Image (cartoon, rainbow, N blue to C red; front, side, top):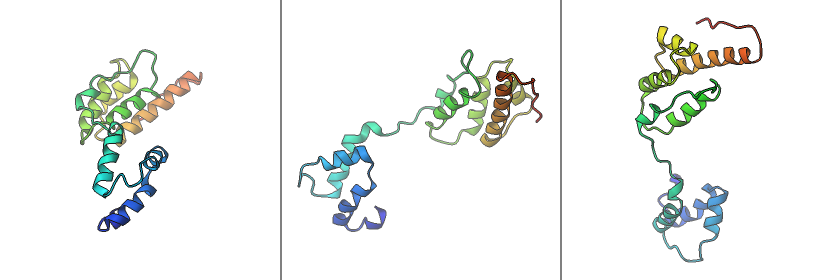
Amino acid sequence: MAVHSKDEALTCKVFPFSLGLVVMRWFDGLRANSINSFKKLTQAFGSRFITCSRVPRPLDSLLSLTIRERETLKTYPNRYWEMYNKIDGEFDDVAISTFKVGLPAEHCLRKSLTGKPVTNMIQLMDRIDKYKRVEEDQQQGKCKAKVIL
């Protein structure tokens, strides 16, 4: 689209090729000659699909996340990353802290993150993966492995 932005007529013709199935159905349903400029097309598109836009979540929404009773390290981080990805900005230090606080005080991963803190999200993900494997091994009845950091 950016390549053709100087030629409005061409931009209108190229626009449909950037659409998914649902939006394409909407586009095909437009009345002939109902839109006469790219500006009007983008306005119509925006007014129809505004509900699909991503609304950023406030940073404090991470504070409400805690691991649920009987929840595993397989599902809790997934819920956490989903919420984390809805927050605009770079808040890795806060994200690391809130993830740790969301774990029970007696949880081995929380003790590990307290004893040997991580400094970035990659380290946090790596540590979570190590403890996930230990948890999965324990659930499968294998011997209780100890994480070596």
